[in-house]
Image 1 (cartoon, rainbow, N blue to C red):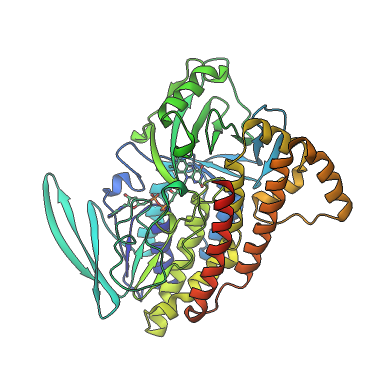
Image 2 (spheres, rainbow, N blue to C red; image 1 turned 90 degrees about the vertical axis):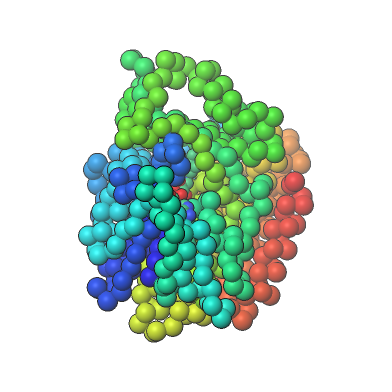
Length: 462
Ligand SMILES: Cc1cc2nc3c(=O)[nH]c(=O)nc-3n(C[C@H](O)[C@H](O)[C@H](O)COP(=O)(O)OP(=O)(O)OC[C@H]3O[C@@H](n4cnc5c(N)ncnc54)[C@H](O)[C@@H]3O)c2cc1C
């Protein structure tokens, strides 16, 4: 087995194969980074907000017996709060979690994989897949030593593509399959972050992460402050490019310059983790994750949550699931799409059944201005309903509650009607995912229904 990309998803998939395959499966993990910089997303560093939900960490512990702790888990938080643009309303979102030391977490993931028996090949860039008779049977690429590139070809029963947002492998998948190859550019958010020390005398609370909705400071996205300690923070923002009159870095600079908490802030570069930007997807996952001889996982499969852009958790749990599917394929001596289908089912059941609904909610949210968001957060939704929506669940409203909301909603009728429309489509999408096809024969007809609902939502809010 070959796993491409030693980020969150790839390390987890490789470790799972080695642990569950109990020495009977050879697994090679390759990455363009040397092992000393494992998990680095680009030349600037481990560009991430570093926050992950506790339930994802627990899943890894329960399934593969790995427990994380210090130094990679830098801070524990009891909640994530989402603030309205006027900062007058805050609602809890997603629940407890951790803020990671990302370079150390990456190192820990690789160490666990190596300990389990995975082989690592660093400085190795995958450039394409090799296909024969409608199946992926290997990959090609080159290793780099100094300025010299040496080409390689590797044959393999399965390639797991966890090479992140920039994957070339999924985009040029050389066989017929149900996997979508391209993503709409409006579903990709440019995102930038700074790890920094606050000035003397300025402190933040360490027991919660904050997300700030503001269509002027972060058009179509949000700003965040995730605390690592009282005076150490990860701050950043993501935007939808087409809604923003300014470039990403200019917006980040404006925020840092105007928020008093960031006066004389000192950017950090621990472990060569510099400030920088990268892309994150905010759509539902690729509806099919498997093909003959090939599986896709993590950012390469658009796993991040469409509202929060959180991709660490789904990358971890998806890595475990892809790894288990790979080991079962060895046991069944079958490496075809039908054999791997269980990975689709497992991912949808645990996480993916809510993401299309969340994508619909994200499209709605992006269409509102600050005034409408302030109004909506004050009048339309209670804190518990907002939390339910953030988890992709539909709050059940009684007839009298609907009437109260309707009357309150009259102050911003367009936004209220948009919310009612969106909740209806979220419900429909959630129902469709409850009936995710049990095998590939029903996939195309099912997928058409999902696409139709999402097209309707896009049409309304674009
Ligand atoms: C600014 C920002 C903030 C974010 N904040 C959060 C957050 O707070 N919480 C959260 O949960 N998520 C967050 N995310 C998303 C999260 O970082 C990703 O979802 C997560 O890192 C995905 O892990 P991955 O393993 O799929 O991909 P990656 O971490 O991108 O790893 C991909 C790996 O593949 C390697 N690779 C790529 N191409 C090749 C190739 N051709 N050959 C060999 N190797 C290759 C890369 O070197 C890299 O090591 C954020 C993202 C950004 C950009």
